[in-house]
Image: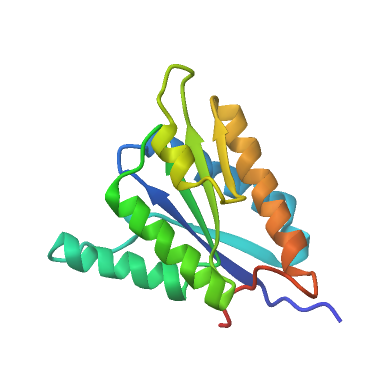
Length: 168
C-alpha cells in the first residue's frame, strides 16, 4: 500500500561560519538529491546555524546545536578547510559518540584543501575515521554529498546497519 507519509531525515551542516559558499553548495546538492529520490517518500532537510533562533549568548547557542546533533540529526556533514576549530572538533566528538550509542547522526567530514596546505593536524585527528574525505573543487563536493546520501540510504536498509534514523 502506498503511503503519503514522508520520512523527513534531518541533516546538520556543521563547520566554520566562514564556509558560507560550501554550505550553500551542500544545501543545493541535498535539494537536487531530494528531487532524484522523491518517489521514495524520503526528504532530507538541511539545517545549519542560520536556521536556529539567535540565543542570548554563544554558549546557549551551542547548547541548541549540540542538542540538535545528539537528538534530532540523522546525519551531520562537517565542512572544514585545511584546519578545524575547537567548536567543530567538539561537535564531531559529540556526533561520533552519539552515533556509537544510538546509531545517529551518521557523520561525513569533507575537507576542502589546496596542495600546499599542511594537513597534518586534520589528517591525524580523523586518521581512523572512515568518512573523512578531502576534495579540491565544488564539483567534487557536490559528488561527495550525493554519494554520501546514497550510501546512507543503502546502509539504513541493511539488517546490521551502522546507522539508524532518529525515532520520531
